[in-house]
Image 1 (cartoon, rainbow, N blue to C red):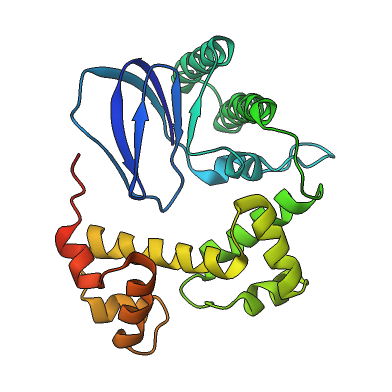
Image 2: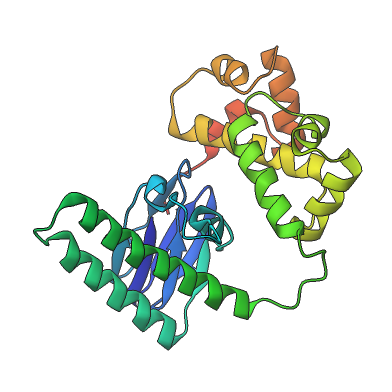
Length: 247
């Protein structure tokens, strides 16, 4: 989901991260993320909600992978006036085109084309804001592969070796890639992602802690509690009781 704040200010929580959004802000909220907006002051935004499958078709011979370009976007992006205007115009066109009486395949391709163009424009804008990369040219791409594997296997694989084997590289190489792109080693990144999944389940479901431990691949609830305390500094039960998802 793209959330384009046009007027006013809002406060959002996305995966337990508080974000202050003013006019010109763009939030990118991905499948599986939990989010909410606080009451705050009055604000106005356009929301574009779409299924990832809409962007999974190949784009010509170069096979531009739109989902990968979206993955490269930050969760919160402050747009300049030109990019913000392009985004607003594109959203207006998409709204009009959704109401067209056209054959479904043709309409789907039209909407996909508009959305792909928007994603590429946002990706270009974001790339222009970044400092020159110090890592090897393929590090961001391999890191995105690591993240996709982690999202799919976080409930089962807790060790760097499993991901390195699946990617066809050594643990040392994966750690170097992760450090270059994310600023932390692969082991710490896996632990952080596993803790995030635990927090989602603790706050946004009523599952017993023992069931959460089992779902996350821990053989004993006590091992889960020990892991969670080492990351968050409190027990899962304490976190569930004290965390206030309101703003």
